[in-house]
Every structure is written in C-alpha cells, then in structure tokens.
Image (tube, rainbow, N blue to C red; front, side, top):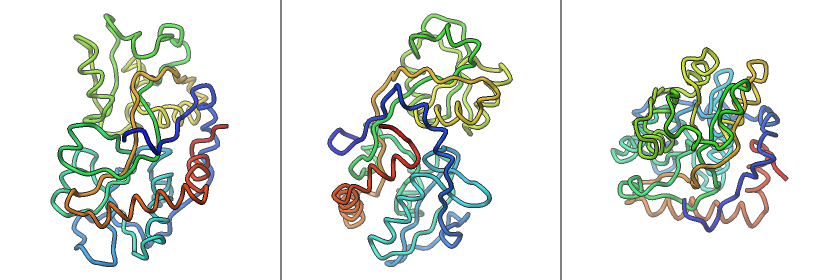
Length: 267
C-alpha cells in the first residue's frame, strides 16, 4: 500500500479503539460460506477471513467491521451485488488467482511478494506491527518488538502474515508459535503460553480494549510501516479502476476518514 492515499493511526490515541464496538452490520443477504460462487457481471465476490477485528469479523452470524462497510458501499457505488466468501487467510490470494473471488477485503497489507501475484487498489490505511503483552510484563517490552531481540520470549504470530514474516526475518533464533486465529493467540497470551503477540496495530488495540479485565496492554511502538489495501486480479482492470474510483469518491465526499474513525477512532 504505497503512500499517496493513506491515513495514519496516531500512536497516543489508538487506545481509543474501545469505541469500535459500535454496532454496524452488513445485511444477511451479503453473507455466504461457499467458496464456489460462479462469477457474474452483476456480482462482486468478496474474499474475507473474518477473524481480524476491527477490520473484518463475525458477530451474531453477521460479517461486520470496516472492510464489511467498505464492501457494502462498493456494491452501491458499482451497482453490483456483494457476496462475502469466507476463506482461510492463507487461501485468499490463491482463490483470487483461480477466480473463486473477485476482491480481497480482509485487512491485507501490500508487500512486494504479493504484488508479484495480484494488483492492489490504492491504500486506505497506514498501519504497522506492534506488540500485545500482559500488563504485568509491560515494562519488559518498552522498546516494542525490539525488546524481543536476544531473548527467550515465546512470540505469537498469525501464520503467513506480515508480522510472522517480520519476526522470522528480524529476530535471530526467535521462538515463534503461530496461530490460525488471532483469538487463539490472545487466549494463549492470557494463559501465559506465549509472552507477546505480534500483530497489526488496529487489531492489537482492539484486543487490549476488549480484554481489559485480563489486563492486556498494547506496546504502541510501530516496528513496521505498512499500507492496507484491497487485492484484485491483475487481469481485472475494470474492477481495479472501479475500486480506485470508489476510494477517490469517498475521499472527495470526506466519507473515507469518517468511516475509518467509526472503527478506529482518532483525533
């Protein structure tokens, strides 16, 4: 997600994410659990891994979050029906390449390896990797991810994410425990099965907010700068142009920042 149309998350204010629990849902007719929906001219099949609040997650059988709101409005903008297709995170790009979905709207960061395989719309959010730790251990991690250097800490990451890649490449001999779901990683942190959880800043602050009774704390030092955008097949220039026009329209109407603030409040 390269620079030009991003929004930053101010570090000192990001803990305001408790307010992201505001109710906002997509109507049930957009939901689908099938990964075998046939392509159609009047349909956009949206690939999601709905375990990454506040960007995309399930609640009471509904797919909600910032990405879900974007998907609904993209359908309105293009005059097309939206269907969510639930996929494992590691299967998203393959499903896109094999024409099982039309767009990935699941909090995906732009990376060079991903750009070799798929196209990205203009980014809508600047993010990065930070730590979630137990409050009682907060003082041990004052320098963020770099507190993990030359240590015996067990580090939790989500498999095949930018956080997983960053820790693997940056910290020599790191003891990494990978998880398929962020909720499982948070439980492991609470249960002292891992010492720190490395994940995207919006999600880390969300989990810190909703697990206040379990005394979890985000370490608000960004170790990476990443841009979040929607993935589209390289051959699908029509949808790519529509997605970019949609973002430009949201910005021109001052709706993009307002939508982001609904789920990721900041001044």
